[in-house]
Length: 468
Ligand SMILES: [Zn+2]
Image (cartoon, rainbow, N blue to C red):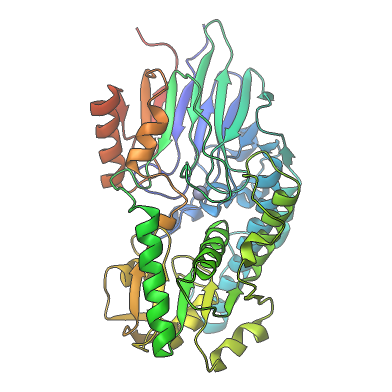
């Protein structure tokens, strides 16, 4: 008799970022997701500690999707000795090549900035990882299509199913072989069934253990038509008064969903035809991945009617690649809509647009996505009268509109409905949420489905062999 298989929660336990779950048997170690911690400083500092197990001892990584809080630590893992395969879908591999190169570039830029200003505690400041580390990690990617069972390590298999969250995103069923095989289902991040571009999340398989996300575990999104009405009203008001609209948007997927929605509002005559500036090189690179996936009918995209570009339905989309093009927006003399990263206004080109528009009462800032605690986006959503950015305090006079319905995460009711057909697992672990959200979803799965649902703590280890 060997030791029982163990599941360890190395991240995204009691918080939304740093997804890292380790499945260990006597003979193998498989890591599901390898994300960066983001948000509050005490979380970000976890990125700098040693990885809890020797990276060289990990046989494989199963990657659910290409968001940086799920894949962003891979370059460090590879640099520190991991040399196994990173198993993911083809679209995830394609997106990760954009996301990881960008993340490495940002790390190098931040270190360079800290050195130039002399405000690093370390002399000289070092990046968490470099662009070379990112290239090295990308060499390890092994794309496999949805629905294919893959041997990822001795005695451990994995199969990916569409999660409907971003393109290529997957839930992962990990099977540990043995006298009594054990099935562990990882939800990854779960999308909304109403996503305009992606098919709804696949029905989960029966499993002994379920690990489920809970980003919106304590919330219900407002109906989409209500959200679209609020968005249309806000844009119409700013356009009428001569102000602009700034939308901080995550580069991956949110920009695509927004562009589809803006096109719909123009076509239906609910907002005037305004120029739309997509100002994020990364978002534009991702947009190309989506266009390619649509053209090639990837298995997780909906068949969209017509041959028109769904992302430029109004014929007003301007794609800004260079910093000069971005700066040219400072001199716009007419109302416009600017969609720019980062999504929580923690950095990126959107800061310049916010610094210009926030003091203008005619303007509107639309927050379409999740705003983590400790971010500028959260401060704006919470009604801050002034926010610090680019070294100054900027007064907030523009109208701020939060639109949770544009989330690419299922809400509590959608998660419950998604899990309802699944036979009760022995244990469900509720992860990837602020503590109040995770506790709420665990309570809901207990009350509504009779599940044994708990919220694991950071670093907790649990047995996954059959109980007594
Ligand atoms: Zn995600």
